[in-house]
Amino acid sequence: GIQVEQSPPDLILQEGANSTLRCNFSDSVNNLQWFHQNPWGQLINLFYIPSGTKQNGRLSATTVATERYSLLYISSSQTTDSGVYFCAVGRNTGKLIFGQGTTLQVKP
Amino acid sequence: DAGVTQSPTHLIKTRGQHVTLRCSPISGHKSVSWYQQVLGQGPQFIFQYYEKEERGRGNFPDRFSARQFPNYSSELNVNALLLGDSALYLCASSLAGSSYEQYFGPGTRLTVT
Image 1 (cartoon, one colour):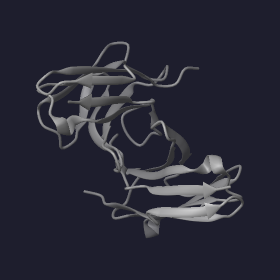
Image 2: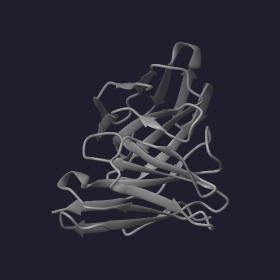
Image 3: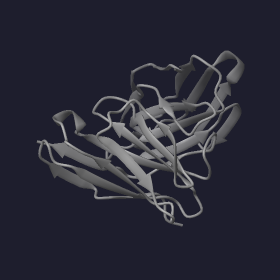
Image 4: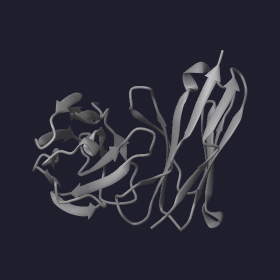
């Protein structure tokens, strides 16, 4: 099956700093989503981005499908950005395969 | 519009018991998927239902079963609970069966003692 690797596993930032999270996947996909999981467990949709580039406020994402990776950029980080960020991919089915996540801590 | 809803929020069961978790998708969505998330890991796919039919099954034992109703809501049933079934159970809905953005509910946190 498709393997999903996220890096780094942990990240500590000072408020205001920028960061880049990476997601590598082992096969072609036609669904790629980025999520933020808050401390209560809720998975919040950030981007649906099987290819191309999207921006939403301080967040942006780029997926290069031909090279099998996606990047999530967080600019001017805030303490509320803390939590776990997941990349999940799917291929011709409704099954999403999740990476292990990147745990982000933003310090004031 | 309401998002995906799940009930109950929390549940404590004893080994050997069975449990039923419920999920209502976003209005207009016809596909529901179930995931299990144990502490420290990403969610793992259990089932997908689309138009009341099972469209996918993950690597889970037969103790896990699910169904989808005519109103597209869904139930996940787990029999003969084990301590290892303790997890956050997440439900996701999407417009159709594949390659569509999935939206997750708040989850049901199951503790098996």
